[in-house]
Picture 1 (cartoon, one colour):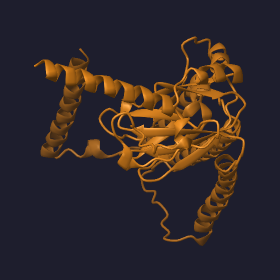
Picture 2 (cartoon, rainbow, N blue to C red):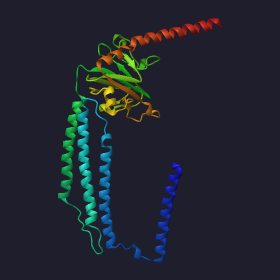
Picture 3 (cartoon, rainbow, N blue to C red):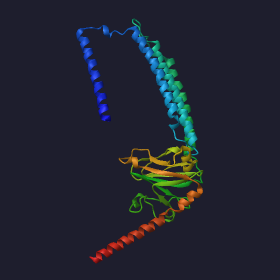
Picture 4 (cartoon, helix red, strand yellow):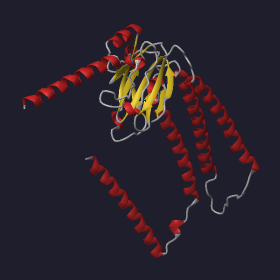
Amino acid sequence: MTFLILATIVLFVLAGIRVMSIAALSAELRNNRKDDVITDAENRSQGNMWVIFMIAFFAFCAWQLYAYGDKILPEAASAHGPAIDNLFYTTLALITVVFILTHIVLVYQTYKHAGKNGKRATYFAHSNKLELIWTVIPAVVLTGLIAYGLTVWNDVIYPGDKKASVIELYSKQFDWTARYAGKDNTLGRSDFRTIGEGNDLGLIEDSKSDDDVIVKGEFHLVKGEPVQFKFRSRDVIHSAFMPHFRAQMNCVPGMETNFEFTPTITTKEMREKLNNPKFNYVLMCNKICGAAHYNMQMDIIVESKEEHNKWLAEQKTWAQTKAVATQTASVIEQTNTTATSDK
């Protein structure tokens, strides 16, 4: 049905264009040029219609802002979130002012200088005054905006909290893996050459990696406690995007990137705020990284310290995971050996 509606609209447009072409050709053949002369009344009408259009357009934009303004950004759930939001809304306010002023000037010119028979436009090739105005003013405004943005960026990206817990987010086509540093709060070393069965992250077996905890599907954070994320990628460039925490960082193959923030609202509290019992914070990939890019999502649970410790105690360490994998491989090998002997 949708296809038929679109096809009908396209056919009507094409038919209208064809009718207009035929009418223009017919007038040319009759050598009737009277219809081609635009009258002063038509020019005034066009100027008035531009004014009406501008008022209607601004009213439509204002209605959209009123109806959907609260959906521009979700509520910030990190300590640095309000600073990011202030920067965003400051930029948006400046853009809105420029947008309104330029449209008013444009429509005013079409209204005031509507064409009149016998009237000729004034032509001038150069104005130092105008060029100075439209160069200096934007330069000053943008310089101030960039300085403000750099200040916010430096505060956000370089907090340097030494008490922050360490979590690695490992990306590959097409999923995420979270790895928690153990009791020493230091992640074990890794090498892509050690990637294999049961070792998707390429961890190097040593005392520092043995107590790391690896999880998929979801990872947990503690409200009010800073966390330093380390990002890696196995294959292509991915982008770790956590919208409610105003956090985004590229995951680049062959290098490690970082981002640090402090969660301020638990998942339970946000569910109550939104009146949505199914709400979860989410980690997404913000780079189109391949055919199954849409699959790269991972839930984030923000909870109290007690809840987090309970959850973490239920997870297996890298040493425990290795032991289970080794035992399973041994059982499979024994089974295969027995089956071969029976034959």
